[in-house]
Image (tube, rainbow, N blue to C red; front, side):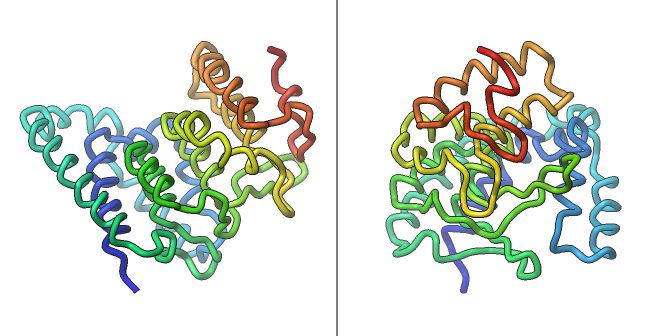
Length: 252
């Protein structure tokens, strides 16, 4: 089954990522993060090696910056027109799609899946995410799991779900939009789920503190930005997880 909606969103995601250089910037600034995403469970050893080989072929962020002006400097209006056109198409397809969660593109070996909403958040496309959630996209569904954290006790898995993907992709504008505009939808997601011994708030704090590419003032700005929003959505700073509680990371 194909989904015109999914592929229209994919077209916009590629446009946003190409315009911002996000993929290449991630490879330059967060090599371990990118490498983990390419060598997660579900790939054979041969595929992991090939993924890392392909990663090394990516241009660095500095190389992208050199040509970025030529690619986009004179074509900003064209790019903006394409984005507006895609937004109109996406809105039309959302209206005409009976079940916007029905199409799931995934890796059958890992039982992971990517819905239209999951795809849109990867580019921090707040506009499209808002449209999808308003149209009934399921923010609660879990499509498998992701072995995203290596702790002294082993691998700690997080759900492959909307809230964890938003944090994992550091889609901060989308996270802020979701916690403010869809607080009631976010509330049930703030606690441990099933066999996953972690909460979104703890995962957020862990990612911020463990990411050495963030400068101290950047970490504090992100924490001050989202600390009250998580509480507004019902997060509990005392809730224990495999990584401890939020209060163990910082005292505010």
